[in-house]
Length: 222
Image 1 (cartoon, rainbow, N blue to C red):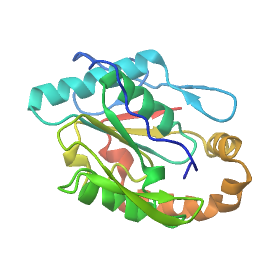
Image 2: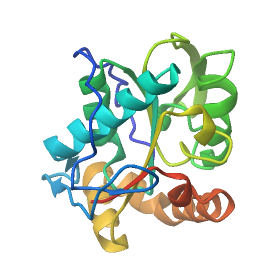
Image 3: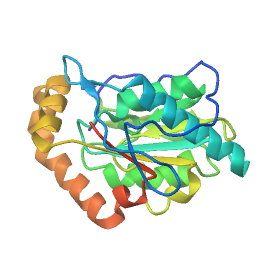
Image 4: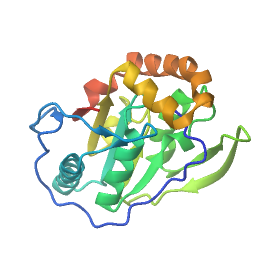
């Protein structure tokens, strides 16, 4: 869901070293793991477990080193699952830039458009995105992304059938519906409460069309 007015930070710490995923995650493919949880802080934000962040960062760095490809982490999930805090934590740990799709969605009906932009703009030749001004309800400046620099993209719509092959690590977050709603409304208040079902319908349509959970390397329950 759009988090109005939040800046898109860039991590500044050094890269993680390759390693195994922590036990606090359910992994697909060759990465081992089990069920996990994240602690919830007041105001609806989720604080990702340090071991989880370390393990995911190590897996992403290891995959990029093994393939020689650009390090790209995609973090997806429905509203209130903790995508923003996990994305920020991973970017900081990896020394990567981070794009929050809240800054890319062109309004309350823009989930699909932002998902397409992940492939065509963020990870494509333009290497950037047109930021959306939620207060004015209009597009604003073009934000350029260094095309070869490590990058974390977080937001519902990040993991699609088209974007998945472009990433070195794909993460899906999930939580019970009541928990998600409490977190999201606690964070964003009445503005999101009014738009909850409008946005949820787009999430459901995207999940049905793209199956992001099945595309993920790691599934984390928050």
